[in-house]
Image 1: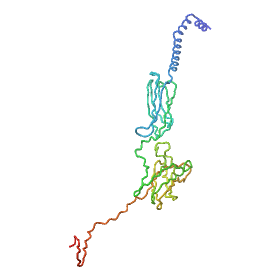
Image 2 (image 1 turned 180 degrees about the vertical axis):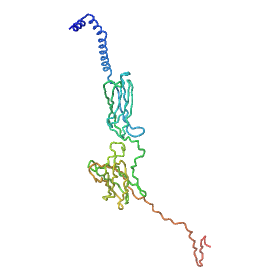
Image 3 (image 1 turned 90 degrees about the horizontal axis):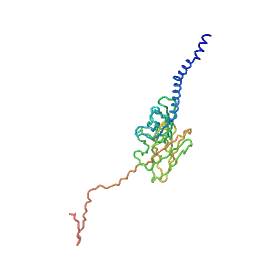
Image 4 (image 1 turned 90 degrees about the vertical axis):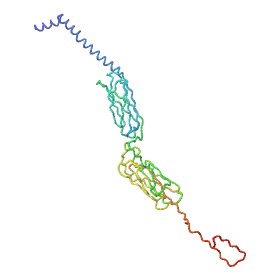
Length: 334
């Protein structure tokens, strides 16, 4: 009880009260003020820093190499202070390819290139993911759009060979092109061609058939589809003269077909050629395009007989009996 009385007297003494007030004034209140000021500064910074940015994207073919390139440009338009530095990553939404642009300081612009590894791109967009470099909490994002790019294949220096050429010993009189022909009813399954044959002749057909999509492969969206029945057959005036067989497996190329010959001479006049999809499977489109040269035997000119120079024809002098008043003129006669 005596100790409790002493404590009560101590806490209620004027000296203790004065000391407590002094500690509060010198320590507690300043710390509280500093904390409030820090919170106010943070709120002020949050209000002043608004992720101010500017960005763009464009897609194009590269000058060298293969695949569409996306140029992504990002500008940090905040004031140039350490607290406004942003770490940026950009990602193409169509291909999933991304690039880390790194730290972009306030007032700075950076450009990065996304290699899509595709020869064709539809119109799309990229997303810029943002976060503060100094580790403060908070993230943000921006988007930018780009236009479509088609047939951007510069990786294959070899040209696609698909122009039909007549076999040796023949000459082209016309050429036929068509397609796509479809097996499953998605489009036409056949095409009819007509041309005039000046003189009766035996005909030869040779050319190329398109299997797959060589115009946009190897890096396009429709490569390596593995369709197994991209085939045609050809008839002349109702007579089938030849048919192609799919090369099998994933292939994107123009493949040689023919030469196919008519069984005999085709009469002069109008000739009808029917090109049909073989339709050995109708589960998929199995679409095909074709190019055919129509050829005839080269004509050989008939030689004109000539008489080689020979000995001069001898002069035959007349023989006459005794005739009066007749003068015979024969300069080569003796």
